Image (tube, rainbow, N blue to C red; front, side):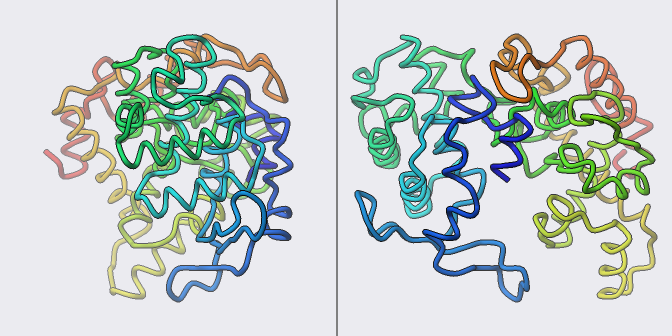
Length: 377
């Protein structure tokens, strides 16, 4: 995944200031497999075993061992923090697994703090974390320990970047929607996912709207055409057109996959299985007599119910936007150089998505007709 993100220009680097990382080759699957992977690892009864067990044998991080890392963790402690040392990434991943920390949010809060230090919003000394800055993996590891122990500035960073920024400043440098940090995708180079992360019930969440059909349209052209009637064309990932329908389709089926207890990585996220397969599995196992559209409607009902909970708590259209910096700051380098999220085009895309979803165009609340159609009245 890292080479794909680097090659297309959506690999978040130095807290989303850039979209390619000069040391990305250090994080290649080949390097990981040849030098650190001990064995593959999988969930019970899975024939794929997409995870791995890694260890570090030499150097300052000798003794590091454990499951992972996945692409998200590699980006979080690698390119986002300007760190080129893969062994430090492996160690940071191990620490988070053992200390009960989320790697995406931990990497994001550290990357945000590093940029704040770099730009003088506050100093590393203010946090009791001398040396914290882009590329300093020793300080990064120290900070993870401080976060877990809630010591010194780690007590503030443990609250996450969005809350920490309300205490320390630097709010405009937090890349989030609804308070949740963005995963390892710079959405200036993937326009559909920009909306998917923003409208997600949990905010910047790749488990609701990650859509590799958008960034690998050549691989999935048959699914785009057969399921959605989309002819992707050149550089589909940089277009706004057809993304409302694509993301709604993806969101509905993500809800279905979650509810069936299936794996997104071997299902709809990385290797899309056609909805007809989900239907066949369910009907064979349970005798359920509904059709494929009934199954998707169940996913749509879940999505709308989650939306209704959020609306009840005061969230609405005002909260369905990417962070300002991704709209105001163009990508500095790489294949996506010059790209940013165009405000007018994003507004039009969001309106189209609301219309398709059957939500009020001004508030984002599911309309009475939509609620009635889905049995949520």
